[in-house]
Amino acid sequence: MSAIFAKRLQRELRELQASPPVGIAVETVNDSLKQWSIRIDGPEETLYAGEQFHLQFRFPEAYPLESPEVIFLDPVPVHPHVYSNGHICLSILYDQWSPALTIQSVCLSIQSMLSSCTKKQPPPDNQRYLMTAHRSPKDTAWAFHDDKV
Amino acid sequence: MKVTITEWHGAAYWRWNTDEDDDICGICRHSFEAACPDCQLPGDNCPPLWGECSHVYHMHCIHKWISQEASKGQCPLDRQPWEDKRA
Image 1 (cartoon, each protein chain N blue to C red):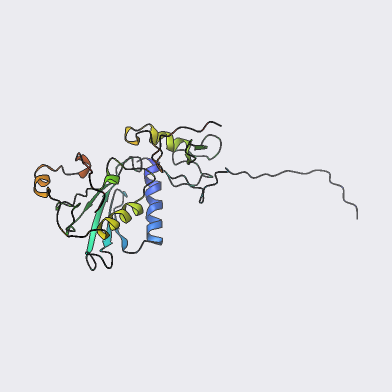
Image 2 (cartoon, one colour; image 1 turned 90 degrees about the horizontal axis):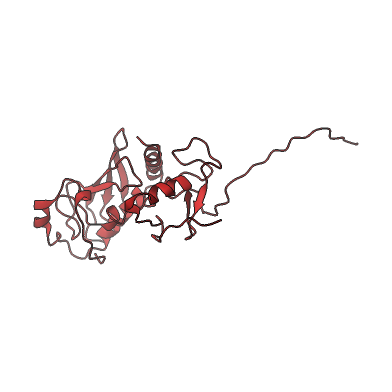
């Protein structure tokens, strides 16, 4: 395992446990640090208030030079950018990834994506996507055409 | 009282003058005073490197990122084309 991977993940874990942002909590981290689950609370005064979701992060050896794989576990929020298999359409997880992003900043982006939602509905192409989706959303060729929701 | 100094030893301390708020590399999140995660010893062999955009990372970290296709040759913080700043 590369040194950059382990040391950065240990540091991020320490910081997230010491001062987690509101509504975000690390739940489990496996021994190799490669797989985490993080609880994300539906933000107050939004359509998701009172709901709790769980994100699964899987880190490749090349993290942070390569993006983590991030999906929602069941129950998946009903949201125009979240497919019902948990895959999330969010550019920073794919071609807009940067090593300056962190687990915390990814969680905050997802929290903000939930907050700005005005109507709970699945993506219009949900059924089609499920038929063709790879196991990992990182293998999907994403097209990003909507920054509004 | 008169004191005569017969011998003295100088001791000095230095640090990188990176002007960053928290003096950590935005890629590995280690201090510039420490080496990047792939180096054992801090110092001249593992220096910070500035880009023309004024952002600074460990030289080894930014070069690893830029050498990846996924980087599109861009600075991780502002997505501007990365160019090593000439001294």
